[in-house]
Amino acid sequence: MNDFTIAIYCFIDDYLQIAGKKASAKRKVSDAEIITTALVSARYFGGNLEVASSYMQQHHKCPMPHKSNFNRMLHRLGETIAAIFLALGDCLKQLNTASEYVIDSFPVAVCRNIRINRCRLLEGEAYRGYNTPKREYFYGFKVEVVTTAGGLPVSYFIVAGSVHDGKVLQAMPLDLPPESSLYGDSAYTNYEVEDLLAECEQISLLTQRKSNSRRKDSPAMDFIKTVMRKRIETTFSEIEAAFPRTIHAVTRKGFC
Image (cartoon, rainbow, N blue to C red; front, top):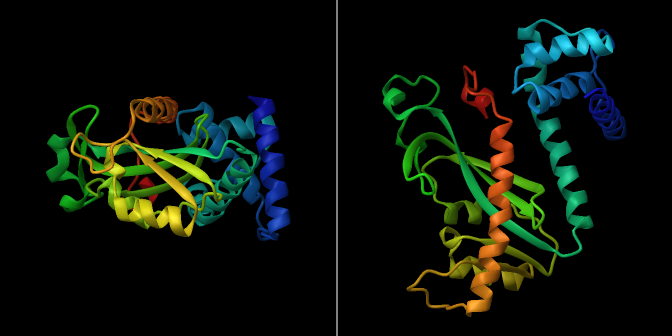
């Protein structure tokens, strides 16, 4: 754990220096220490920021602020954390010589269905979605994720639970290299988008075909698409395993 903490701190600190993002000289804790604490919390402590802060104080002598101040600092660094993720995603795309990617989504529920009427974090039917693999409804968000064929996430997009995957594909900035192949399930079937991606961005959208599809697949291609999509399900399981049992938040932005 110590090696991981030091390595991620050095990487983030170098990135912030290269990007020219400097914290106020009056602050005792740096932006790199705040981001590192949040990542250590997600990686080892189930998202518990207080435990992660205690660990950073005891083992790395970091002067951690009070919980409320820490949360405010972390919120201000939200765009910076997203930029770091996108920069890593771009590096992974350049290293992915196979140029094969997979897209899918997984739900993140804010509360159980029986508590929807009492939920203060979200309001409206837009957040009520359906989880097809588990055959159950949920109330919250969906996270659209693009991964490499090996299961490494390179891009993500958070939407309300009721938004269909096919519509998300039209709004999500893919930014994949030319001559890439993007595999998805039948929910992403959209012939117009498929043709536009092939013509404008040289990206092959390879979705699993429905039984009544106008564009049939050969048995070999259908098998390839099925195999390619299996790894992303494992990635989702690994991500969800790191989640806390409950995500404590008082605002929608904080939950996301």
